[in-house]
Image 1 (cartoon, chains in turn purple, red):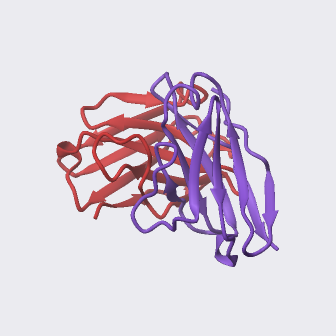
Image 2: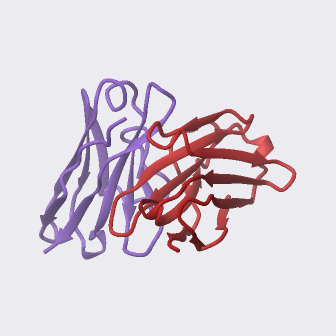
Image 3: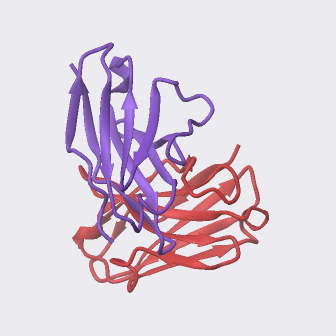
Length: 110
Length: 121
């Protein structure tokens, strides 16, 4: 299985919105609404911020939102804050009963 | 609140077998119809799913690692384990165990803190 495709980096100024894309295939992202997104700060374990495409776990800011169209999922962060600067990973359950991660996107808050 | 903790040697010699254990507290592995997973992250690189084990013992592995990976569960100790054979320097990584918060979910709410395993002679 191939890793999902994410942009290596994105950037935005405080208060702005950014979107990170995650492109897979009809065997993963396109198969189910089972894409999750993780935020990872340096030296820390990943933290779940979106699951099942667009749902937020309790305690996660509503500035984070997820969506999907075809084989591409997207994470949007609105009202960028300095604390949002981190690496972001998408992950999808696949039709082979496996999981696959994206390569990760480094978000820089200017 | 489920808590996971990885343990095992931090240094493994090339060609040997890497062995890690994930201890679960705050819930019983055998009573949760969950997938318990292992994920790794080489230094400076992205996350890679290694494999998962269902509470019943069924296993699912990353095709690229399948020939070298074994994941097992010990319900009496409330632990699940990872073995990766014939390791090379490319297997140097932080290894995480992870699980969903709600049984049956297919994403990873809970993560261990991660343990760095270095492959070197």
